[in-house]
Length: 425
Image (cartoon, rainbow, N blue to C red):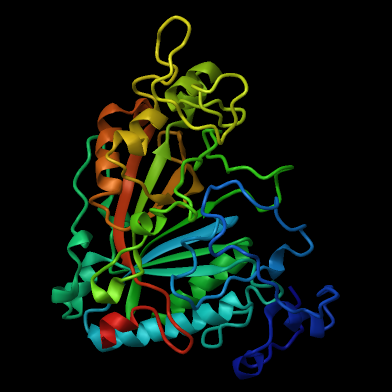
């Protein structure tokens, strides 16, 4: 860090990319042949989280230039594939903030998120952590917890689908690390860019809201694989193959809510911190791990497909082995979680791995930050999780330790802010 450089004032930084700032200061960073112009990767509708399609990713020299617009019909961070890093956080509104304070905060946050998505300095509370970075695929997504509506006099506008999630068998939830009035999901392909965004939003919330909990996660960096494929979780399994895809005729009905009016076109996000008992899991031979999941570990192909199957081969739940046993075990994860086994229930999953060191007993505190978007949790997450908790062989190796449910408003138009229809409609 150059201690001799004098930072430009925030007003002078507006409209200038973070990458261009250091480039113009003689930092010796090449901005590229386009003169530092931002490029936009086509992420909005062609490939949902976990879907293996499209190129393997841009080379490292151009990775930071990818930009995802903040404004639009849906909030960014839902349809885009997972970035390399995520910051998740929840805030509780200050007791005296009320509806006016919430409006002020969402206006600030939306304006800041729009700037950061373009790779520009944040303006208010810009801390220069990411001045030498481009937008790096940054997305910022906001959600409203059930408690927010009572705290702002908007109880009559709380949607019925935002009712508390039921208790599930095996849950070991830490309530201090779940729920919250406001939820924020920040994804980026650079760790500093994601941290910078969270830190700025946290400082802008001073006096209006306080941080309730925060979690950091990671995913495979775009371009890290030699060919496009769905990412893996910390168990080494390909995770996300059966995500619903925008091309499917019922995709919108499964993922996006149709009411109430202020939420139409938005969604609901279920967030779960799921610790993986990796020491126990890794003691199993690969063949046993595959039977627990119902897919080959090497390539994600279903065990029902034979040696020529690929990850995209449909799962045949009625397939049997030569000895007459089920090719997909009765308690295999893919069988218990399959939409066909849950009345068609489906969610758009966008999960990230996490690793937070060791617990007091010496075991790893690592696992999955599960994020799932859906039109109605009562028809998506709840029936599937009920069945998984009771009959999934994988649940022996998992501990659900935190949980939250949030209404995710539709996107903000240019000049508007997220949640405007609720607060001004």
